[in-house]
Length: 502
Image (cartoon, rainbow, N blue to C red; front, side, top):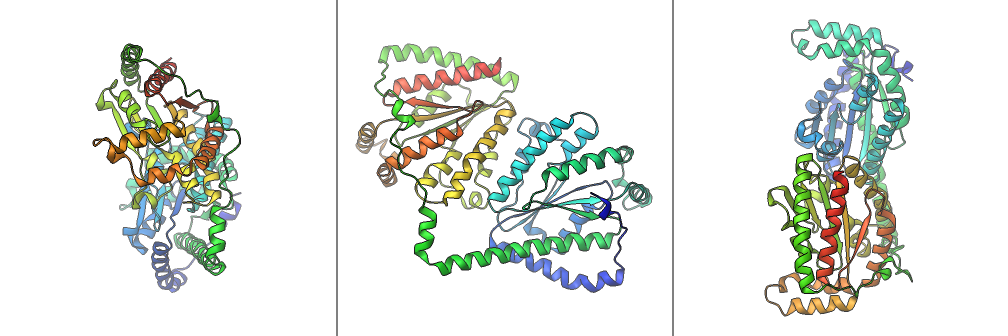
């Protein structure tokens, strides 16, 4: 695989100086065009120690405007990072639309090192590489351009580079004992890298192997590859936008709204018994016991570093807010974060839709409660035609993978759909309307959403079918009676957390 990057190709200083001025102008212009186009570019550097990874990143920061670059280099995870899923720190650092993100020692580094040092076997390596492919596919599906460079030196060239840098008074600090230990493991590194590159190359995130012996050749290869790939994507999107505009508004509207789906004749929600009730006295006694039970589990989870994520979805006026208040009243507020999810901000719209939820992944031992969540992608955004059908259909897989990252890290994930019938919703709307301290809750949007009841029910049915997994099942709550719903919710949280603590 690496033979083509061991040909000792060189570019003379005269050749480089002749090309550099025009190329530098092109790179600056490319950056400005990307800002207007509104999609992000992720550039990842991996490879042999001493092959020019950091030098390439420094050159890009020198030739382009660093204000519009996101540059990140990663070391051993901090305590804060270890308490969260592995990809949290990478999601947090993703560039917004219109910017380049330059990443060093990122998501490929640790799996490579773990395999080379014998901490994991081949099967474990392959599983981690598959998670990387899922991560990159999720970004690419949303429009991110991903460029991956493997900076290469053969063993002889690496030794010569390390020795030269070690003697250089300006760069000797870069060479550590770890670099020489890695050099002794060169053959294992290359064998693992070959497997890694083969399994994680795809048309939309292909690896580019760069020969790193000659600094000028290396620089030109990296710069022209970035220029050509991003320019190609800019041209493709401009042509696509022109084609859509030419096709006319009617055709564009059909493309967005087609495939939304009508209500199925049978829905999973139809199986719920909404007549279930709990009397006031029984409720008062039962909730007192459940709150004490939940508080005890919460304290134990804090001690063991087990986090919980509670997701509340449901019809407008189904009682999500009231249920959340009953849950939080059993916890210590210092260990709980409640996140009300509304329309995304401009900053959030400039990132992948999951970015804003990854940002809120908590440290170990905390409760994070979502009043609405990432499921808006397959509910309101689907029903209101805010995104094309391929986007919300793709979201089922993306959400399953996101939740697998949470549960795989040990998070206790509990998801609730609060269900009421249409008559009960109308009764609650009218009650809110006539109650001064509740009237603010009722908006014209609530009434408009009510008119789309069947569309929402079809969307909920598919959401549950596609995203209820063994590790992250949905719990459907019969919520016509608020007392019954609140008891079932707290009991479910207790049972789930107690099982996790075992």
